[in-house]
Structures are given as C-alpha cells and as structure tokens.
Amino acid sequence: MTAPHAYDVVVVGSGAAGLTTALSLADRYRVVVLSKGGVSDGSTAWAQGGIAAVLEPGDTIDSHVEDTMVAGAGLNDRAAVTYVAEHAAGAIDRLADLGVPFNVGESVGERFHLTREGGHSHRRIAHVDDATGWAVQNALAKAAAAHPNITLAIGHAVVDLITERHVETTRFVGRACHGVYAFDVATKRVERFTGRAVVLATGGASRVYLFSTNPDGATGDGIAMAWRAGCRVSNMEFNQFHPTCLYHPKVKNFLITEAMRGEGGHLLLPNGERFMKRYDERLELAPRDIVARAIDAEIKRLGLSHVRLDMTHLGADFIVHHFPMIHARLLDLGIDCTRQSIPVVPAAHYTCGGVLVDLAGRTDLPGLYAVGEVSQSGLHGANRLASNSILECLVFGVAVADDIAHSWDALPEPPPTRAWDESRVTDSDEEVVVSHNWAEIRQFMWDYVGIVRTNKRLERAAHRIKTLRKEVHDYYGDFRVTPDLIELRNLVQVADLIVRSARRRHESRGLHYSLDYPATDPVPRDTILDPWSRD
Figure 1 (cartoon, rainbow, N blue to C red):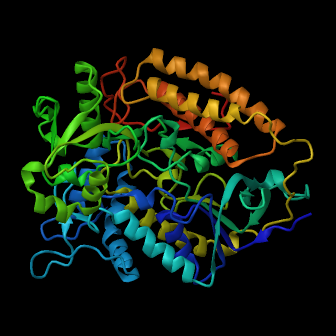
Figure 2: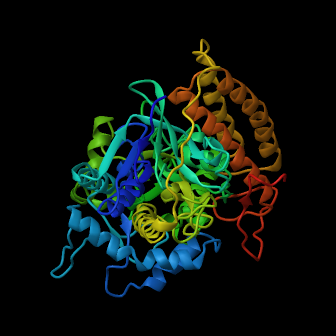
C-alpha cells in the first residue's frame, strides 16, 4: 500500500488565495500546494483590473465599506467587509514588497496610480497596467517556488477530502479533515496528501455556464468536495456575469476589464446610441449586475448578438498607455480599439456564494478552511464590487494562516487512513458520456439559470439535474477517475446547489433577478444549504 505524502498543511489551489496562505504559513510549517494544472493556470492570472484599497487622501475605509455594501445589495456581513477594507492597504504593501510592479502615481508624492471602477465612489484601484492578476500571480508563484518549506505539486486533481470516514481504526470518532485524495495526471494514480489542516483555495464555479470569462478549471471543485464532506454552503444563487466579455467567433472567454468603463468607456447599440441612461443614473459606472442586466435586456429587446464598448473618444495614446495588453490582444484579433468599438456580451465571471466560513476562514469541518472565491465569507453579499476579489484572497489567506498557527496544538495529527480503492472499477470505454453531460449542464444552466430567471426555467433545470446526477453517480461508481470525470462530478453537484438556492430565494436581489419575484424583501437573508438537512 502506498504511503501518504505527509505535510503539516495541505493547500488545494495555487492562485492568489492558495499561495498567499502557503507563504504566510511556510516560515513555520511544511506546506504542499496542489494544482490540477500548472501553478498559474487559475483565475488569478486572468484578472485585469486591479485591487481595491484606500490609498488616496479623501478616501476612507467607511467609504470602501459602504460601496461594497451597496454593490452587495445589503446582504454583506458588515464585519467581514470592514475587516477586509481595513487590511487592504497592508495587502498591497506585501505585494509591493514581493516585487509586484504597481503603476506609480503621475503626481509628486503619489505612490500608486489609482483607477476607478464601477460601483466605487473614489479612485482606489491599484493596478499593473491592465494585467494586474498576472503580475500578482507571477510574484506569488516565484516566492512560493523559492521557499524551502513549500512543495508545489502540479498536475494533481483533487478527488475528495479525507475525513473521519476514511480512517482505518474505528476508535477515531471525531469529525475532522485529515487531507485529500488527489489524481496524479502523470502517473494516473490516486494518492493521499495528509496534514493537520487542509485549505481549499480552488476558486469558483463559473464554468458551470456555457459562456464564461474563467479558465477551464473553474468547475466548483472545492465547493462540491466540502458539501460532500458535510459543510454548509451559502448564497450559491448569486453568480456574477461580467458585463463585457469579448464577442468573437474564435475567442470565447477574453475579458474586457471593468476599468475600461471606469476610465470613460461608453456602451453603445449598433446605431451608436448610449443606452445605460435608461437603466441607472450612474450609467456605465453602475455595479456589474445592473450593467449586465441592461445589456441582456437590450440584446433580447432588439434581437442582437452583442453590444459595443467604445473607447475611441479617449484618444489612442490614452488607450495604449492604460490598456496595453487588451489593445495588443484585440489587434491580434483584427480589432483596433483606438479606432473602433469593441463587440461585447455578458459572461459568467464570479461565484459570490460558496462554502460558509467565518472571519478566520474556518468551515463547519474541523481542520478544513476555505479562502477566496470558493468561500462565502460575507464580503460580497448579493454582488461582488469590482476589484474586491484578489483582495479577499490576500486578506483571508493571511487570516487563515494566522488561525492555523493559533490553533496548531488543538489540530490532531492525521491518523492512519485508507488508500484509494480501485478494486471494483474498470477503465471507461464510454468517455463520450462525460463530454456530452458536461456540454448539457453548461447549456441548460445558461438557458435556464442565467442573468434573468423564472420559476419555470428553474424547474426545468432542476429536472435535468436530477437525471444527470444519477447518470454521473453511476458512471463514477463503475469507472476509474479521470480529470474530466472529477470535474463533471463536481459540476453537476454545483449546478444542483445553484438551482436549489435560486428556487429558495423568492425576491430579486443583486445578481439574482426573478421575473416571478421582482420585488426586494425589506430584510436581507442569506440562503444557507445544509447537507445534513432533509430539506
């Protein structure tokens, strides 16, 4: 029997959340970071806009908090929002110390150049041109690779959490997480990684939709695994659709950053008319949910395939200076955004719900933490404010590390656990089933559980999910796991959680807009699903 890979802490995910947590732990503990692809294949490297923090005279923590609460339609946990806002400037300082080359201010004494994005009342977005995520990911990955106490295990797709159910001796009865089972892509074997604490930093689930700005790996793995292990999830109905994804026949997930609207970009109909005035007095600077619904409404009203985002009135020098990466990528695709408007459509972008955690990132399962997009910390509420996403990873990554260190003596050493058992399964001879079911999930989620919802659409989605869950369960029980099967199993679970949550919310709030319940309840309430409940 193959022995487990034993570490002090197991981190699942190698984006900003996972690497921040690992780096904050590594001076004290031995940490392994598992990534199902390359270290930088996750969503962090794709982020263009920046990181929100109060760094400008005249801006205040209270203002950042209020902007976040307004964008979140009042569903946010004010304590969590305040905690993140108060620690934002320190997070920026840590990144700068790691070598992230933030754009400097254009005036004497200005340390950072700050942009403004939709929903923000001040310029508070620190950035590295229009490729902040890549700069942050590069700096964190470089630091992690150089640390002697961090092992980067790439090509490991985590199958499930190791809990008390997998312990060899029946004398061990306490609920706890002791590690993970992970499929090694190179050896095609499922291995065990154990530790006193496990941190889920697996990102969101936007790939459950047909159109998404996220990389292929955003399949809700951590949410599904935590749910199967007995953790509550919260607010899964709030799926953010970024208003401006490039509409192009060959490129389906290229994001056109929020900052383009923040710096004065106009949304136009094919006849050149600006239309946001019909939906919100803040025009293009309205929060993402409002802008996405407005674009969706115009597309449906006029039978369009897309709308346009125009920057040409700002001048070529301004565009090239502020958005060099986007300008260059669009030129490669035959679009000169200094001379012509950009075709855009909304696309699934961010999962605002997730595994329910407290301010230390603790889940319901002792020894298991969650940080970043996989979690529901109370920061985002019913809609995420622009440029609060990487910020959440940076702040909560440190909070999780601090809590693990504080709780170290109370975290048990991993007991002997069972190896992965493949004695009753065979290799699949029907891989087409996986690809077919994957495509079907993403299509009906887009059609029935998208930007605008109805009871009938959600009922149809629930019916399809019931059938698919049985098919996937039977397939998983009969055949050896593969990365595609692991992701499909997680996708169908996450789709079920999204639909169940959406059917429970009998109002329209933030990112959840229902034609059957257009009003907003006076008292905001979280949607919490409990795997132990029969409801």
